[in-house]
Image (cartoon, rainbow, N blue to C red; front, side, top):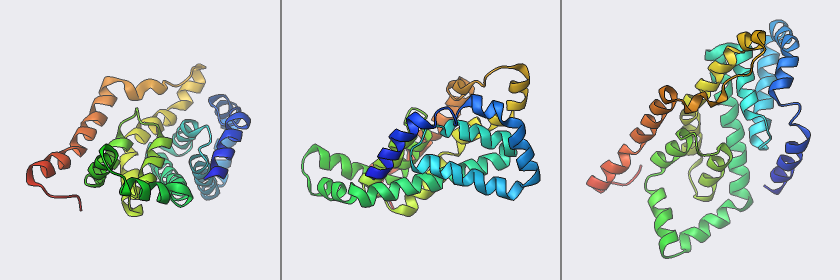
Length: 226
């Protein structure tokens, strides 16, 4: 886990010029030419880069998502983006868990008072809480990757909730990336704040509210998460 933090800090200073909108704009023709002549290799290479960016918490995840849309279109771009992000998030989840997550989880489990009550509350509603932290745009992706590792969330729940939970937001940015050709032609920059516009944000918040429904049902029926 320490190695990931060190690489993340180094990457923040050394890769910001390479994983940027300007770099994508300046190299767009070369990227398209490579994709057209080596599609499978382009997909594999893109996935590897996306996994590395997320797995090592490097800067450029948003640019990578835009690139996925730009190179592969909205449908396949979303699939590749979500797959790469899920694999990368799983790697950092495992690193955090086996780094110091198990010890922290055991400490939280043996604690008493408010801390133990909060952990128990999350444990009993894991599916809902996992989807909420993925769906709500205000929760940083890096934080959403680490919290479950410290709370002893099962790996399968983490992976499923990550893959499905990031689809809405990823779809939005991938679609923006798919339209970058027109943006480049006009000499403009993409509107990355689009996810906070009402017609985009409200449906996502609606999904977040829907994920709270099981908590309300269990509060009434007294049943625990399965």
